[in-house]
Length: 297
Image (cartoon, rainbow, N blue to C red; front, top):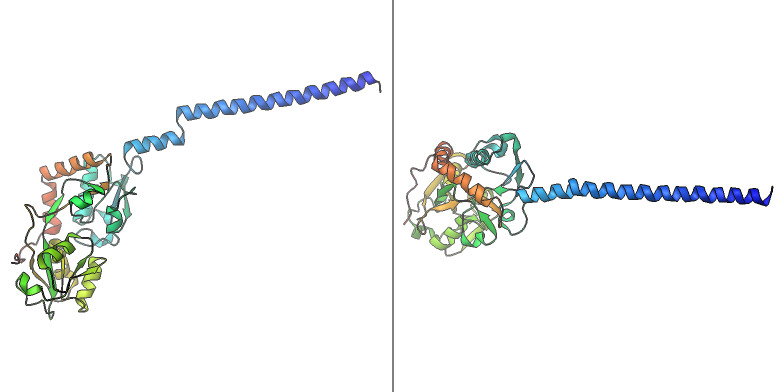
C-alpha cells in the first residue's frame, strides 16, 4: 500500500473522530438548552415555590391535624373524616368556608405537645381543644375562638371526692389532669391541692387513674366531663365547674404554624361561622348538656 493511501486513510479516520466529537458537543449543548428552558417554564422547583407561596402543606388540599386517638364528643369513633363530632364538624365547616370540598380534606395525627411546639408543621391547622394563651401564641398562631368552655372536676362513686361540694373540700385530695393543658393549669391555680396536681399524658390516662384509685378526682373541660361521666365512667359524677378566670371562659382556637400565610383566612372562616350561627348550632348538636354542673366556690 502506498504512503499516500495510508495518509488518506489516516486523514479520513481523523475526520470521522472530529465529526463524532463535534456531534457530541452539539448534543450536550442542546441538552443544556432544553434543561434551562424547562427551568424557565416550570420545573419541580417552581412547583415547590408555588406550593410554598400558597401557604398550604399540599397544593389543592386542606391538611387538618387532630389527636390520636380523638375522643367523643370532639370526634365520633376516632374517625374525623366522617365529620361526626363537634371538632370534626367544625373542621369541615371551616374547609367549606375556605373553598375546599370534603374530598380535598386530608387528616393527619399529632400529639397535643407536637402541635403547639415551634417549628414547621405537617398540617394547615390543628384542632384538639387548644386553649388560646399568650405563652402558646409565642410559638404558634391561633385562629379566633371556635368554642368557649370552662373546666370541671369529676370523680366516681366511692371516691373520697364524691362528697366534695367546694374547692376547699378538694385541696387535701389527689387531683389529676392532662399535662400541658388549661385543665392542669386551672387545677394548679384554683384548686392548688396540697399534694400538687398529678400529671398525665392524656385524659384517657387520667380517667384510668381515677378508675383505679390512683387519684380522687380529675379536671377536664366541661364537654369532656359530661361525656366521661355519662358514658365511660361507672358511677361518674361531675363535682362542679371551676370559676372562670379573667373576662372570658376558656377559648379554643385552631392552631397554625407561627406566622402562617393562612392565619387571616382561617380566622375569617371561623368568624363567618360564628356570625351565621353555625358554631352555636354545632355546639348544640354535639355538646349539649351543660346543666347539673354547679360553679364551685
